[in-house]
Structure formats: structure tokens, C-alpha cells
Image (cartoon, rainbow, N blue to C red; front, side, top):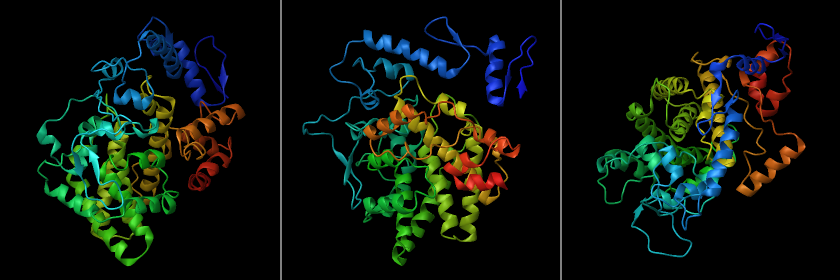
Length: 441
């Protein structure tokens, strides 16, 4: 048992995280204050629930607008209809009203992307691409940056999902001059059956590395990050097994690795990502390309380049706090829907765990089990829910049965308890057999 060392306190706890939480009661400086009133709280989740009450009061007093902005519509949040609206103003987001109406109407000119088997065009405004979609689509969203100038819009395809362009949902206009990198990416995607290869990826590869949220990816693949989409298609081509498809996948891989290397200055960082969301789509694309290099048994030169990408990605994620559950939760705003918040954190946890696995396989020595300061990913029951309705049905079923863990233990603590014979391997084996074997060794 762990005892509290505060004078006069006799509290004892079995788990370190519970003792740490208790100790905050004795430290006035660690109290969290509500920005709307004078109340203080010891736990961040309690503060968030309290702030929701203020937001609900504000929402009740806010008249319903004739048309909500794109982000409020997607998140099912009450919008005041102003430009910018109050929700977007508080979060420093780009507030747009580009959503298409349900009735057919003439929209802005579309940008041809020339991909067989998928939508042949996407709107210049990403907001309209997400028009009447379900809330879990808007995955890599929101941050606070001004719209880039016209020259920035004409940058390479990877910039489309980097911080400034990704936050503002901007695509390269069809009339913009194409850079050589754009041409390479478009050539890679021409005449590809995108939909088929994406389905192959999720049917035959996803189960081994399940860190992409399929419902979100499928709904946004025509308007989301092109580098991530092309990476998924590349792996789908390889999995089909025929020689011509595998040859094309290898060609795409070389181009995508070169593209990610050429833009390493855009995503690599040794500082914490403060006041902006993590570029998850970028990290996912990089990690999948690294994994694919090992699967296809690439040349030693390409393997070494991917190892360098892995070290750069790991350095960035450690510095940015990607392995901290507290930092993950800090990315969520009180006005975000429960579904968005759950999915965002779950996808981040799965990415962090996959990155740890790859580091272990490559023997980089950059990550240890002690660095995994986040809970185990969910066992798949909620993660695999195909639609919003299914998600909430499964979520409430877990709540009623008591199977939903509101305060799950961190992976690092589970490993510590297993090592000290205070916990069995069942919890690890249920979610990830590899983790179970790692703990047993």
C-alpha cells in the first residue's frame, strides 16, 4: 500500500495514480480554477464537466441561428450564426458557412483530381465537403491560424494537411500553378481504383496496425489529406499480391518517402505543440510508410531513410507530448462532442502505441514502456462502430453493463504492476497480444 506523506493524513492507496490524485488535495497551487466563476477543482475532468454547465447555460440563452457554421453543424453545437460565431471565436478557429444545402444548387468550380474509381472532383472549399456528414468525420480539425496567402496554397500536396492548410480546409485550386511535387502526387493517383484499394487496406492490413479510424477516414477520403490517402492506396495495391500492383506500390512508396523527407521541416519539431492540434494525418502517413518499408523488404538505402524518418517522428511526438494522456485530453475543447473527443483521443492512443511498437521492432532505443503514459486502446467494440448511431448504442450498452472504464489505468502502470506480480496479463492480452508477450518477457 502507498501512504500519503502529508502531515496528519492517513490515506492509503494501492495505485500510484490514485495517491497522486489524492495528494493534489493538499496542494492549493495545483487547484484548477473555472474561468467562468470562482470555483476550483482538483481534477481536470471534473472541471470540464463543470464548464459544460456554463456552456449549456450560454447555449440556452443563445437564440437558434437560421444556419449554423460548418464546424458547429458537424459537431452538433448550437451556433449563433454570426461571422465568426462565438464558438469559433473562443477557440480561434476559421468560421465558414460553405456547407452545401440539401437541395441541388450550383456550387463553386470544382478541382479535378483525375482519380478513377472515386469522386472526380472536390469543392475548393473543404467546408462543403463535410456538409451534412456525421460528427466523426472532422478528424484533423481545428487550430488557430490565419488563412494562408495565395502562394502558400500553391505549395506541395503534403502542405494540404499540414497545420495552416489543414486547419482551414483549403485545397489547391484547379487554376493554381502546379509544383513538381504536385505533379508527382497526381501522377501517382491517376488511373487508380481508389475505393477498391482502400477497401483492400481495411480488409486485409488494418487489423495488424489499427490506428486509422475507418469511419472517419472513409467519409473524408475524397477531401482529406492526399498523402495519407495515397499511402493507404499504396498498401492496398501491395496487399492484392499481383506483380504489376506491387511494382506500382513500390514506385509510389519511393515518391511518398521522398515527399515526406522534402517536407521534414514542416512537421518535425523538438518543442511541445502548444495552442494547436497535433497533425495526426501527417504522423499516420509517415508511420505507415515506415511500416511498409519493412514489409516490402525495401533496399538498404530506403530502409535507412525510413529509419531516419522514424527517429524524426519519434523525437517530434515525444517533444509534443503525444505519449501523455493528459496532453491528449488537453487537445479537446469543452464544446467538442463526446463522440469527437472519444474518437480523437482513441486514435491518438493507437498511433502512439503503434509508434512504440515500430521503435521496438527497429530497436531505436528512443522509447521505453515507462514512456507510455496513456491507457490501453479500447478493445474494438466502440472503435469499430460503423455509424454514429451504432457508436452511441454500444457506448450506452457498456455504461449499463459497467464495462466502460471512465478512469482506466495507464499502460506504464499496468506493466509495473505485472512486473511486481500485482496484476495478471489478461488486460494486456485482451487488447494486444504483442503487449502481453512483451510484459511476460
